[in-house]
Length: 86
Image (cartoon, rainbow, N blue to C red; front, side, top):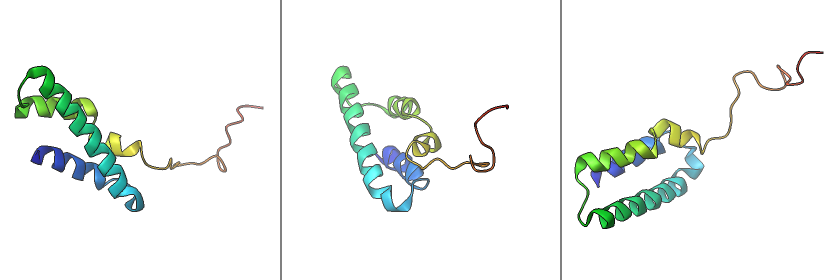
């Protein structure tokens, strides 16, 4: 499970500090459920390669963390309106 904790820590570093613990706990529960499902289907504990594959399927830590971040624009709607050509 050290691999899962390192994966969650990588996600947590990119999350808003005020929500980091809650989101990380939610993701941990989701991952552990997926691991349990796969172990039940296989009838054994997942080996490291299978666990790595599950984490890859879950998503790159930066991509997963981005789902929980507020949208930040490089050039926002106030500077570049989305009204289109006149």
